[in-house]
Image (cartoon, rainbow, N blue to C red; front, side, top):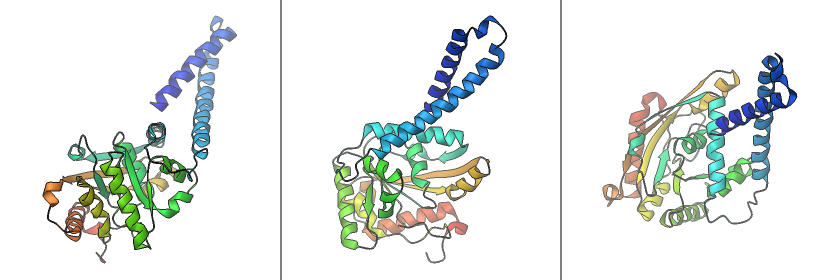
Length: 278
């Protein structure tokens, strides 16, 4: 929608400019119209980027965020859609029909790159995903501020007590119907980009909030940047495998549920994507 709006406004402004300058009275419109259109596209694109930058930098992360920001949610969705279109990022999705049409859920996915959340936010726009992310993300330029408005929750992976507070906060957000929660149960992006053992505790979120667990896997995000830098189309594979409903995991321990999900992901990804460490 953002790209369409920029193109429509650019065309309208180009036509108005040619009318005002009298270019249509002769043949000068043949060069003036396309030149004006391109200039308008560049100018409006820069204005859109400046608007996003100013809006993001104005966010006060010290102020508690208890409600999902509809404004920033919509803005992130529109800008991501435009960015992926311009950069020619092609996302092949399978199994999306298994994602619940209504109600909150816990989404779990393997983790290959910092781009992973952007892919999920784009594909599941309207689902109000809030990510559990490492504390360092809060310091990322602009990203940390915007994620704060989307109710993303930082986690201290080295402190179990602090990590538990994050888990309980996510349970609260799910119960209060504020957002759905997305988590990468490996906890880290490993150098080999393969699937490693899970931190079982994140599955307590679903068990305590009594929400479905949406299981998915992703491939290709770690190759996006090199492809884009070489002006080549980037390809990402996102597979939604299943949704495990509360009645299905009732009676299972957190470890049992974690291992069940791990096996699903491992089977889908294949041996070449599985770490020997498990």
